[in-house]
Each structure stands twice: as C-alpha cells, then as structure tokens.
Image 1 (cartoon, rainbow, N blue to C red):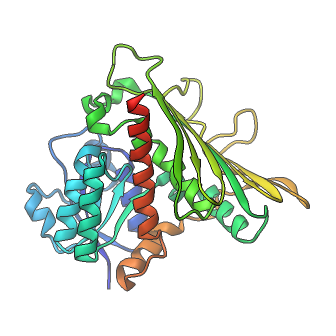
Image 2: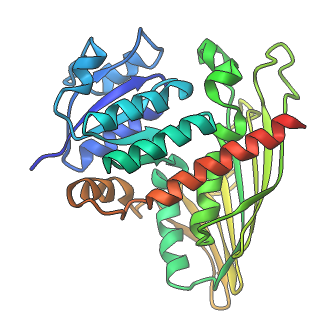
Length: 333
C-alpha cells in the first residue's frame, strides 16, 4: 500500500529535501498546508507543482495521511507534531524538532500515549551520502572503537532572504538548539552513546550587533561513557565559498580516523561528499556521493512495520534534550 504524507509548514527550505526524498521512496504527498506566504512557498510549488494546497489546518490534519512532514517556524513545530500524532499520523520534523524542554516533554507524553513515531530529520547525517559510507566503515571496524567526534557546522547568513523570525531567539530556539542538534546527533550515533552530558556550552553574537536576538557563534563539548565530542557552529560562511557552508565531521577511532568534507573540498576535488580514511592499511580519499540515503526508506518501513530502523526514538529524544540543555547552559552565562 502506498504511504501517504502531508507537508505542514514550509517556513524552512529543508521541506524541499524532506518532500523529495519521501517521494523517491514511492510515497505520495496528498497536499501541503502552510501559514501565510513564506519565502519558500514559490520554490515548493515550482518543485512540486502537482501537490495541492490545503487551506485549512484542520483539513490537513484530517486528510487521511499516515505521515506529516513539518518544517514550520521552529517554535511552532512541537504543537503541529502533537496535533499530527493525535490525528493518527507519524511525524518527520525538520530540526530542531522543538525549542523548549516543555515542548519536548509534551512530545514525549504524546508519543507514549499514541504510539506514534516522532522523527527529526537531522539532514547533516540523513541527507549526506558521505555519512552513509562513514557509518558503514565504522560498523565494519575500519577505525576501531570511536572515541571522539569533532563536528563543524558553519552556515552562510544570507541576510537578505531571512524572515523576521530568523532573528528572534524565542522563535528559532538559539544557535545550539537549532544548528548544533545536527552535530549532537552525529556524536551520539558514531560513539554509540545512549546517554551523555554537556561539559561546556557557549554562544555569542560577534558580528551582528544590530540583531541582538541572533546568536552567530556557538560551541559545545560533550562527554559520554564511550567518548567525547566537540561542536562548533556559526553564521560566518564567506561569500566566496561556492556553497552555504564547509560542513565537516572528523570521527576518531582507536585504530584510525575518518574525515568528511560534506559539501565542498576547498582547494581539492570538485563536488560533494568527500571522505578521507586513514588507518593501519589505508590512507585514501574516497568519493562517497553514491553511498545513498537510507533514512527515508527506513522511515517508510518503520511506519509500515512499527519498527525503529531509521532512528531509535530514545536517540531522537536525547539529541533534542542535550541541545536544549546546552542552550540553557550557554544562555545562563
């Protein structure tokens, strides 16, 4: 039976990749709802001209879909997720999945009550083929036991295209809640950590004093019984870089390391998804662009079979809990 999904909220461009990748699994999008006319609306309609708009939210929630994709303003995502789950839909939400610990508690309660899936699309893992290959190499023991990750998430500000909510901390949640949730996800995943603590968290606005609600720099140090991790995120990507950010991940194991240059290899090879593997037998650079994106097929399977192959629910909860806790620590300083 064909999986049916609905898109709720188009306020972030990530809805494009979420929709496209679910369509590639053979799923059908029965419609989209969004509040007002966000700047992403034209791009969505241009990419998916056959998907109808649903004007009323209640109609969208009761359209008979089995999955809701949510990319509304971050502070609004939790309420839409809870409403979707109470209307018998599983949820894939853009990151961050929520912006407060109270919202996270409400989501946890709803999942426990309804048995629905709440999945956050951490696109810097799930939409990057190089991470897929790194995952396989780590699982195969190519670098031994992973003991440390260093995740860098620089982004281009693109000020002229940003809506007002982008500069309002209560609406986007803070830079650690938002961007750094990606790197927290990767740390927990690659170190196989079922728990962790934030040992350091810091945010600043160094370059945008006229926008006091914007945090343009952040960092986190994490520690678990399996290893440690460092995260740095910012809004400083220079205009000359040919993409939105030079995102990187270094995975250190006891017998080698992997470095991912996800979106660009400055001064090196063209294209994306560059993986560097160094261990006792190999020191090589690999084109990982054909490694695939299994998250979306796995989520479709989980919806059909009520399994957790795309991402364990407890892992998803923990990522957001750590991101929100790190944000609180930084905000108190």
